[in-house]
Image (cartoon, rainbow, N blue to C red; front, side, top):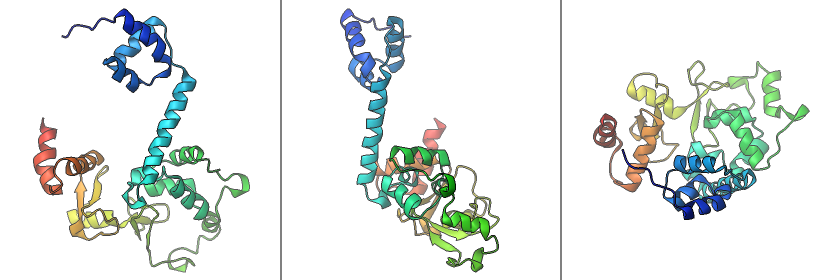
Length: 256
């Protein structure tokens, strides 16, 4: 068990000065101590954060992150981040007149998350008589105009705004409210010979979300494994295959 590092008088004086207006990460970098130790010392000294400053800094961090996301080409933005882009949200909610529920289902997040990002980007939510889009009103009022009878029928296949192909698959366990499912997940199920398990991620080897050829798809057991593969391939070995990574890197790390 290591000895505790004693706080010098100079450190305490500096802590009193900077603690209210600095983030935990900034304090950790400044004092070379872990965040818990710094917070405990601040509490003992009766020092509190300036919440107005902290809120401003968090807002700035969000804005910087959003600028970074928006600076990338939209094809390079993952589904887990694309709903944070103002242009994408505006196109889906205002131009295409989708509901926040529909947008959330498309990218795999709750409608409340979409609502928060709408508020962050100052995109006003519909209310009152405008709460239902024209598309939703038609769905409510024309239950018989579904499938091939619908005036906008496209053969049961379309590309969503996140860049993935959807196909009509009524009854599929992953079907949306309108019966559509990501095509790559259906192809992957045929590839592995079973239904995909909860949490499994279907990966496109060539990064082309529209290329759902079985040879271009690989099923990772979790989003964590998928993210770690991308990190390893990007930072360590750009030539490693998905199979080799799972067999020699991921499985070994999990066994430790």
